[in-house]
Length: 270
Image (cartoon, rainbow, N blue to C red; front, side, top):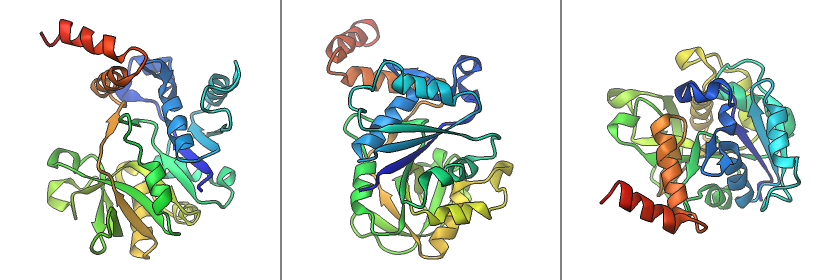
């Protein structure tokens, strides 16, 4: 069982302005809870008992308060949430590297707070079950429009069920340069060797330390595989995605989903 997870949740959330001028991106509400809680719950369902949340300066106290102030949240009684501050925004790869000391030499799950699984669509637990000592990255077949927005892997051979060898990766290659249509969608299971790779990485696309570049080097050395998911994630990092995610999650909620679906049908889909 993989007992520790890392959730990079720093960043200014500029795509969600003006809301994120005063509300940290990690604490933007989706239905009835902040975005970061969905990530912690997902990690817990995959077996994690420690969740390291990478935050901006000044946000860690707010995150801890949310998870502890009035006692443990239901379902998270056995999960410790540990904030780690990324002092300067230098990219996703740097954010993951910030967790090195807290991870303490263990394999770890890694999930992006901007993305939430659809109800019943968890993949981290399946990745943990497929883990065999190599870093494992979650993949999804992308359409043209997303090939310039996501990292894309170089397949290293034929798939074995949902698992495919990874021979490299390219950050946001675009349609013409994409080595495949298998894109990185924000769910990973890394061995601690990823920290050694990240430590020596120069800045990449956008002048930032790119996690995709670390995956590229792991793949080139035969130390990475991909897990092809059969469902997509909900992107809450932009206003339309946030509204769509809220609608999907609210409509599926057993407490009020039926009433909400009836409201949508009456008001918007007559």
